[in-house]
Image (cartoon, rainbow over all chains, first blue to last red; front, side, top):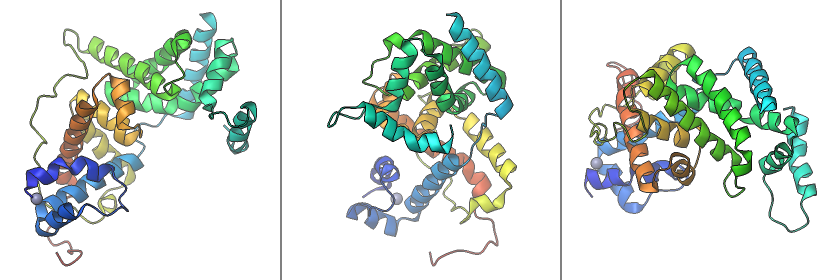
Length: 77
Length: 223
Ligand SMILES: [Zn+2]
């Protein structure tokens, strides 16, 4: 398996539950290819880091202001 | 919403359903009530999804005032179009679709004369093949403080073309399925998949420079 072939499957590997073992041919490529191993693990980390950080929090006071404005507009239409 | 109400909700909705019927999503019941003029029901939907809509809008327009406007306009539009909502898709994905369209319109207005669509800037080859192959520190979170980390993540994702950014946000941050993301953006499933992969790889590439294993840092494992 070439790296390009491996990377074509990256999507499925990232979306599949990490607890489920990878297909045997993919595992074999990972064992012998550091590049793909790093790509898979760091891409996984990328997704996980973005998921676990709230980058745009909605402050409570702004939230209330928005609610009022939205409901007032809706009532008028 | 209080914890008590959240716990009660499934029971409340199932008690309305006759035995054996397919479970109706609680949102659908709220939409029905809102259609009949129950403003409190609509306010519930607003409270349920305002944070997500704000987040998605911020990711697309990258500007707080515009994001605030998008939240207002999206919920107003959704209210006006409630009659068009078909129970066959989730209310949330239907709402997100409206919010994404509003966000793209804002972006277009701001960059006058420049067309912005989710089809923009996608013909780049960057990110299809990883270049930076240095391994990362075993715990990138430990390298930076909370707010510094948030800055890095914001700056990094802002560098992606809008058409990649929005797919990554919907799919990986907000947790929509590939099918829902495709439906929301009016894209084919293969188009969503290819953008998602490129977005992920580009983010990874860009984050590498912050998270790379430093010289002298202990190597974990035997590799
Ligand atoms: Zn490889």
